[in-house]
Amino acid sequence: MIIESNRNSVGLFRQFATQGFNNNEPGSQTSDNIKKIQVLIERRRKEQYGEKNLSREVLIQWIKEEINKDHKLLVEGYEIGSLAELYADAYDGYGILQEFIRDKRWSDIKCNRYNDIVTKGPEGWILQDVCFDSEKDYKDFVQSVFTKNGATVNDNQPLGNCIDKDKKLRINASLSDINPLGPFLVIRKQMGYQLTEEEILGKNTLNEEILSFLKIFVLLEISFLFYGEQNTAKTTTLGFTLDLIPESIAITILEDTPEITLRRKNWNSHVTRPYVGESFKPVDLKDLVTNFFRESGQWLCVGEVRGDEAYYLLRAASGGNPTCLSVHAPSPDLAFNRLVFLASDSTHMDTDTLYKNFKAYYKMLIGMTTEGGTKRIDRLSLESDQAGCYVDIFEWIPGGEWKRNEYPEWFKKKAKSLADSGKVSKDLLKKAKVIE
Image (cartoon, rainbow, N blue to C red; front, side, top):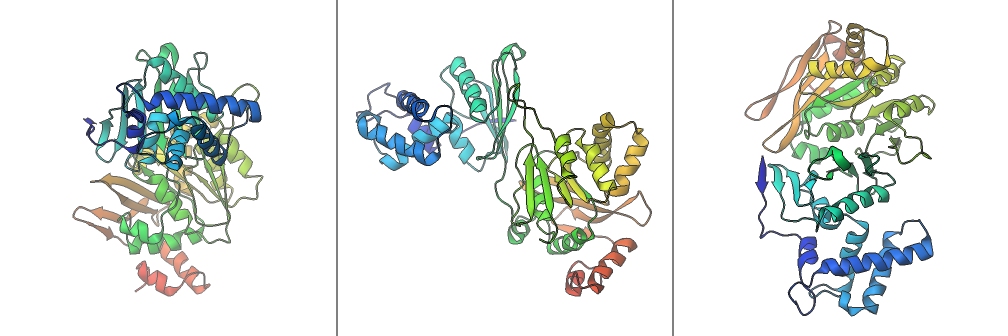
């Protein structure tokens, strides 16, 4: 469903980009000054830096200098520092889309065509009252976004993906004759911080009992996975769970876009590299998983499995490295089916054997859901005492609480062994209801 936005509710950048200057003459738009700033700064950058990018600090300083030289660049109601920041957003940011990138309500920004921009929030997609001047300006903008992020999209290579590491954005675009409606662009935002225990409990993503259980489980160094549909906080909760692992254990995270940020110190991260020209070899998740074995890695995490890296994760798990991942699927059975489907291109194993292997190594399954704007654990399952079968340990009950079922004997024995060796306290076992 698409809802029209409130046209009286406009953001700071939109006000800046559409209001008149000094004397408020009709038709006098900041867009003309933005273009002037872009020309001046770009000329100066090429003269002094060649093809290198400017730092934000240098960019803002240059813009202030240009404003001081030409007072027509001033805008009534804005002091020079704020104005320079806004001009910098237009030059180095995302122009009319910048306010939506800043606004935490929106998770996705989609440009269906130059004059059709929608954003995704808790209530679904909302049509916004901004647009590019023309299809040509829009196409130039899309290509400039890819160029800025070291990637390419053009008529010869009409499908493109890139990431903005600084702003933590995943960007997809398509051009040329494959789009009857014109260029298409999607920007997906990623969270740049990790939730604390207090925050995740406050959001009702899980409760104290589940948290205590997870603190015990990660010490067992057993592979697990998160599943759920889009926008259910799979990756966020996966990252939170990784932060429960002790600092003495190294964690390696592999992603298409750097979504997961941990509070811990002992972790490293790699991201894929798309095709950016013949001089640069693309790097996919399969390459990164293979490289992991040469890095003295321990825990291996792939933020979201989308391809044949599923098979290489299974290899890592079977070789003794605990692995964790998230997969887009609404149920445990469909999660395993998807992993088998993705892995099957890289192995001669039949699907039944693959299925059994995934179930043999991934002993905890956590299902995420969204309801009424709340993203939470819907179901948490453990392998039962019968190999290859699972039992639901925590289930969300309509009305606002989780129901806990009996832990399998294998888990209770391992948890008590951790307590006997001093790795966890008996108080933690009591909080998780492993012991009375």
